[in-house]
Image 1 (cartoon, rainbow, N blue to C red):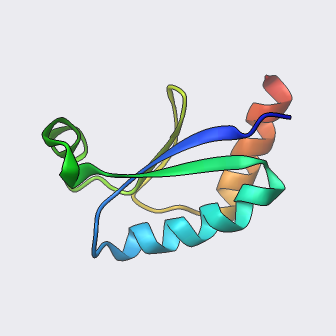
Image 2: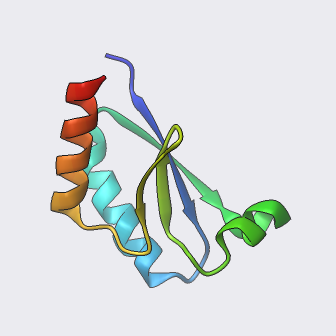
Length: 85
């Protein structure tokens, strides 16, 4: 199975981002995730798009979470998405 590409929009010194990264890291092996951390402050377009609304994780066009990652919710969503694909 090919890894699922997750884009994780983040920025430095963001405690919610750090918490979300820990959750995504735990789930990476279990769900074959490849998580790419993208610092929104390195791209003016992303900084405008996300502003203070981070962290955000996306899978393709689907937003998995915004602001706060909850592990069980993310597990349920990943399981549901994989079942449907």
